[in-house]
Length: 144
Image (tube, rainbow, N blue to C red; front, top):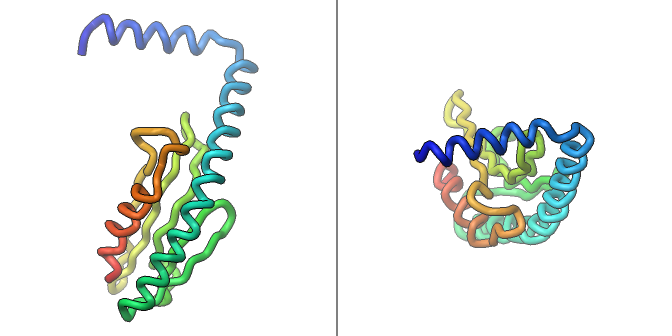
């Protein structure tokens, strides 16, 4: 990496930390509010898609899945057990809000859990149904 790039990023960090705490809190609140709005719109697309996948699985396989919407998330859960699911949630605990895809799968006595940031390369508002379907199908491979 270029020295000038590193130096500029360090200078940006120093300037950012010098801002008043109230300004940083206000910026973070605005960022979280925007992410919450975008995630709400995302859920309007995600819940029906999860239901479509559950219906297709019921029709085409012996796997039974149900869709739940606890809190501000959507979960596709296997009828085999509570530890077999794929869900999407909004995580606001880090420096930037992100949509997490979480999956849990049991085999024998082992539970495998994975977590993937779905909006790693773009804003939450730019996530598409194709992005979400791709994630769902990749995680469903462990269940079917």
